[in-house]
Length: 225
Image (tube, rainbow, N blue to C red; front, side, top):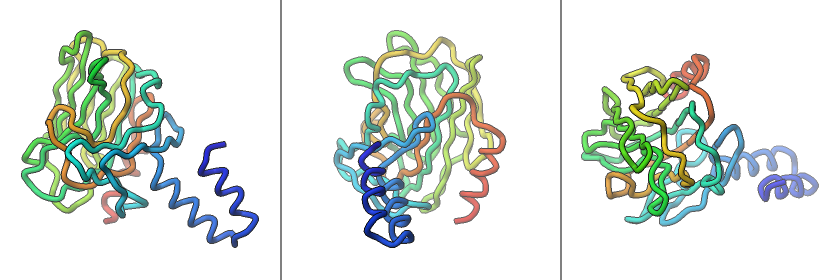
């Protein structure tokens, strides 16, 4: 049982049920990301929590800031997988890493980042840090609005890029992904060399491509703001 669940179980004996529900929901939203269907806490470095679209969001506060998902370096990199995250830019020009799986010592697996114009790029790496894919969102994110970014990878190496639940571009790996041990970080310097100016929330990383039902949920989520 993790620390949050232990705390919630103890609190149940001394607080009214409704208060416990609110406390536990807040703790889960603030401290965890969904990785392969399991909630995992963040380790913050020069970063803080602020109010998000739903629950808490992460703001990178320092030049070397990031939020690292606990024990993510040992999670196998699936052949087919999906990356999801909510992003809200403060201003343009943007630029900055959204999320990445990379290690300065071991090498890179993938990086998701913004261009100065608000366009989102996805870089994937093969053996020897060679770029296996460089695909970008055909649109651009608007300042001050929450956008859902999704990269869905199939077993055949086909990659589909979605913005707010709608496919905007696609590509195919030129070589298999690198399989080095590297942590998953939200924010961080990565390819751009600077942190993202904005909020990051609801990160998800799971095996298999995104489902049509999930894409409909995303459209409803971003359309409700």
